Amino acid sequence: MSALENFTGKFKHFKPTTWSIKNKTSIYLFMLVVSAWGIFQFVTLPKEQFPDIVIPTIYVSTVYTGTSPKDMENWSPGPSKNR
Image 1 (cartoon, rainbow, N blue to C red):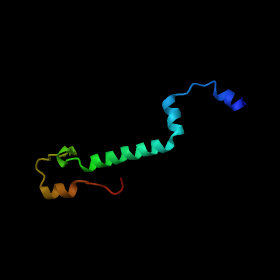
Image 2 (cartoon, rainbow, N blue to C red):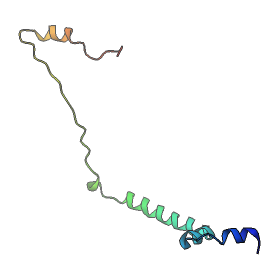
Image 3 (tube, one colour):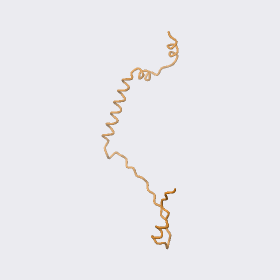
Image 4 (cartoon, helix red, strand yellow):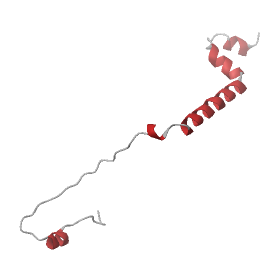
């Protein structure tokens, strides 16, 4: 018995993990099947089942009595390029 076999013999092995390491081709094939199935399900998903995304919009308004709209338009700072 070599030193490596003696060293690895002390650890417990999880059988599914050990099997998957020894059978890499089976795992690659399984992942290919799962990926193909997921892509097929995505492509065949009916349009009605897509969620509606509503983007919230916030409007802020101010009231200055006695000010004409033209003066208010010129006075309003609006979006600034320096900010």
